[in-house]
Image (cartoon, rainbow, N blue to C red; front, side):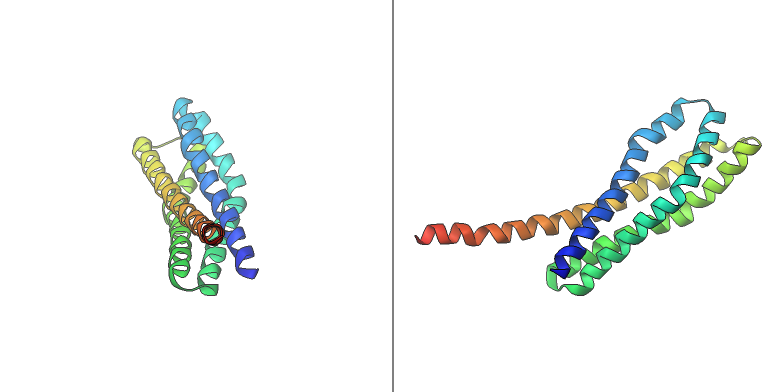
Amino acid sequence: MRIRFVHGFALLSTGLLAGAFGYGAANLVPTFNAVPLAMRLSFHAELMKMNGITMQAAMGASILSSLTLAVLTAGRTRLLAGAAGLLALASFLITRFGNVPINGRIKQWALTSAPADHAEILRRWELFNNMRTLTAFAAFVLLIALAVGRLRVAVRPVHDRADRS
């Protein structure tokens, strides 16, 4: 029962993380690129204030729950859960060392003005955003694979019993 709870929490937190990053990549970034630069910078700076706590919590919960699942299990489940935890950790590290420093610059630009090379810096932010989105999505897919694999195992005995009748 404890393993099922941890797996469920890992699925929930990692799904929320992948979904939030996916929404940002699919909707926010194209919107950032469609509006005037001053509007983008102001909105981006305000968004980062809100995202700071919620995204860190989602990343932390994803990492800890996936790694806890790896510790509580063995074999293929341990391997996939551990890989999911490491992918969630990669999302955190990409965010911390890629996006966050650029976010600090964006906050300054929103108050002053963007430098001449701002387009390249914003492209780099988008690259980091895509990388963390893909790692979060991959972590979620691994946890889904564990859930689907368990469903398949639970279904087999029912079919086997039906064949013996």
